[in-house]
Amino acid sequence: MSMAQQSLFRSALGEAFDRLAPVLKRHYDLAPEQEAIVQGPMRAWNRFAWARAFAPFMPIPAERVQVCVRNRGLMDRGEVCYEWQREFRYPNGVVLSYTLTRPARGGSPACVLDTFNRPPNVAITLALEVSADGSALRQMSVGPQFVIRGTRYVALPRLLHVRSIAVERAVDEHTIHTEVVVSHPLFGQMFGYSGTLEVS
Image (cartoon, rainbow, N blue to C red):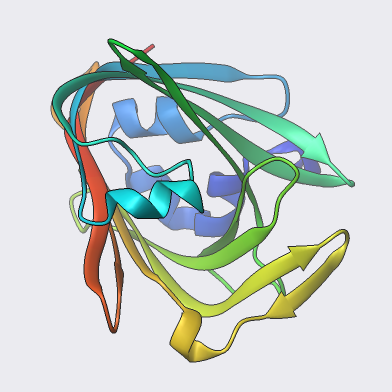
């Protein structure tokens, strides 16, 4: 595989990617046209249910909601990217969310840029960190965040930044434990989800 076609996370992490546990490599080492499905029950919570009117991707609180995440590598505007299509399957319907992870703007080492919704309208920069033993990958918001207007990225003032921390940890050869928490400096923790999921 050429350097231009290798997976986004392998490219961003460099040699640190090789430390990852095999199940995490299967999840994140997706070159263009490769796919993986991650699914299982998760606990979802949301302190501001009214905010779903403005951000419908926020989860509905539930103790064991079935989640299916369809991931694939793809080329977008000449860049190798990583796609997340999440389905939170509640008894009364499905809540969908979409994220396209791109190379970090400015090419910062061990960082990526998450763009949300379709078409994308918000983006946050994430720093990547592999644990010393390779059992966990941590993604934490750092640096600029943006409102997207077509092809323009407009930097958000710090007051509007959210803090996102996502940790995925290998449980065994086939499963990972995921925990995501999104918070704000003024409002505190806003929403998140956690659970043990199977990678296939």
